[in-house]
Image (cartoon, rainbow, N blue to C red):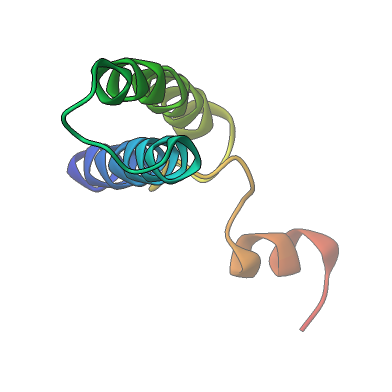
Length: 82
């Protein structure tokens, strides 16, 4: 469970930072403007969706992470591949 939470936190932070930086760069990179605060608030939306995706992924995908797909070794074993 601890591994899953760490995975979700990492994915959430990555989603927030990349979205925030993308919005700031696209807006002209002025952190003292009110639009920077709006960008920070808007960037929280994909991060929140990342938390939801991670919670779902820990239930339907790889049980040890937030991934939706099973681990490669698990897929190979179920398909009969070596």
